[in-house]
Image (tube, helix red, strand yellow):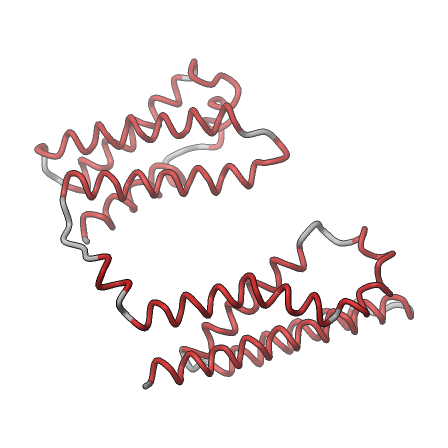
Length: 237
């Protein structure tokens, strides 16, 4: 497991700490003709050797170098302004996947997927997370559907899907606070968001939006708290 952590550390150091913005810009302009692209890949391989501190692992370093460059090239030629965030996430997930594959091939860790899948905690938390991230948003949308029509003219002032992702994040945070017993943090989140929303109140139409968002927030928080309490009850048993 320590080897895997070192490989991930090497990736983060190479991609974020040791890659200047000018290199990124040159790679995006010149693509495969950019020397910085290959220097960036070489740095990743060198970091792997440095952290593993054993020249016998040179095939690991070469594999990580080649795979990293290939993923970066794919990202460079596939991304554009409208999907920068999407391809950043895809790029990082692909790098993580290749790290796991290289780790599995060269170091053959003794991992049992069966033990994970048979663990009740895995299914309890997975079910809770699925409910809070996907199901809960749809439920709240349906429950508040009649009120949503009254604020329809103001939707253009919001970022696309911003409310959806805010809701997902806040429910996951509340769930995490409940299962870890940090109830005070939940109170801070509720107070901070309530003050922020009502601070924007200016006229009657804004009041409708504020009340709508506050009801949705409290409903979202309440559901997350209940799910967290239920999850704690199951895990305690």
